[in-house]
Length: 300
Image 1 (cartoon, rainbow, N blue to C red):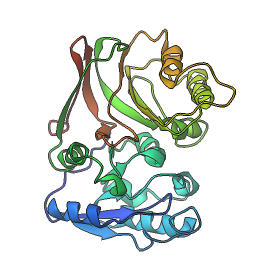
Image 2: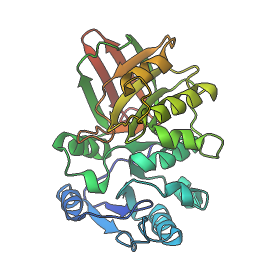
Image 3: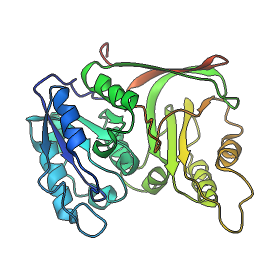
Image 4: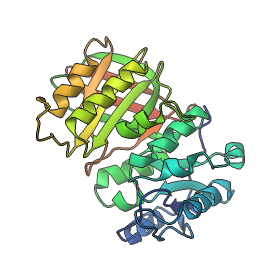
């Protein structure tokens, strides 16, 4: 696994939008990155619109490709999630990027980039988007620590459904819908021996069950080192009720996994969305006193 270099003051960071159009101001993100000592560079079409999308497929691809290829750009912060990254994923030329990898940061629809990067053995960051940098100070600071310091330690309160244990393994995961959509593609998530983290927003509960069943049938829950359950926000029931809440559906589908499992980790579509390294070994501990997740890439 290749770990991109940490950032230094004066480095350039690109903001690009490979998915849904931007409906909010990027001023806060630009100001925050500038306060960190970075030089934000906006993609040419970052504020473009093409109905639902942040510009046409070719415009979004152009901005992302230029950010990947430009050696002066040391990191890429995705502007917004939604949907659209998979429409351009197969057209990305990774050759220049793989010679000089840089941090790519985001979540939600950006899960498709996370799984693609993991399959190409490049670490990345699952964390806030440009449009969510103002949601929560601790979340924003967690991203800063990962970009500049390479060390982050999280201690999360216990959850009554947690399964205890310890693991030292890579993290991989993200949005459940995008993970399921990756199965059968070149960016299919690879989970064996890894800690899988999941989050979701706005789905019907029956669809949640269907996606978790798909993960099981595809073997993605086999041979895991552990599981982290993040936020499952604004989940909906059909008028013909599924007969269970989201948490119950998750617990049912994870039943029988004799591994450590942490529920209620602040990761996903809520205001607190703590940043985590993907593709980097982490120490994961679940006990009666709580959950600890510790990263340190400075010694790797």
